[in-house]
Image (tube, rainbow, N blue to C red; front, side, top):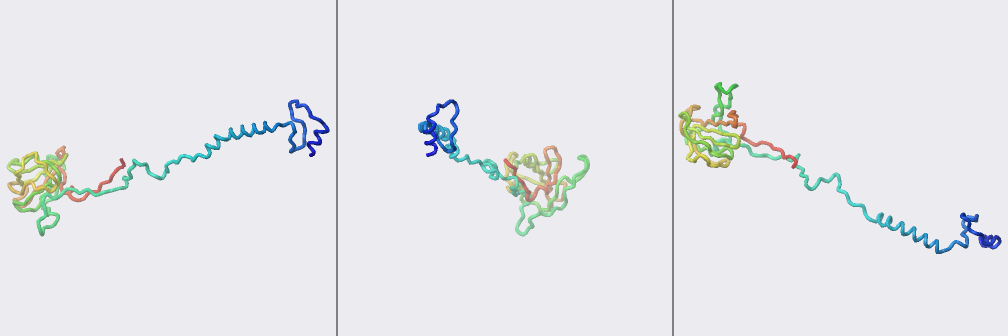
Length: 221
């Protein structure tokens, strides 16, 4: 070979810090094979961990589009909650809504006259039911009128003329019969039931507005 012939002519040269000039692609005969093997081993050992890391799969991240496990998607969920009942349960052949003889007409000021409730057409002796869950707080006579009061949380409903044999403190569920239309009232001549409603500040409200189905919306937890 050309490289071998050149070295035979020139002889073996002493290495003085730089490699002697030689044709491209030629390896000098003095370059030991053990050094090549050592360099190859070093390269492989240096590249080993990198190759191992590259081979490991990347951890799977949760998709941004998927909701968290504890999240409850309820902001767009709506449901119906039953409102109050009419205190007079319809008899066979009656309409679902009793006849309102006189509607709610609150005064502009507390000391003025007005109609602080609604009058429902009814006959004496008609059973009266609880329009919502509550507790009987009073059953007796007030200023010559027969009155029954039921507490519903922060609201209080009143009925006259009405009588009940249940003592104060009796808990009622919505629809429970607690008494009947009976006695004396100054709202009508024993042919109606006056149904009143007031809040904790003695502000009178329209009880008829509580009857029916109300729409509620659930919030995210």
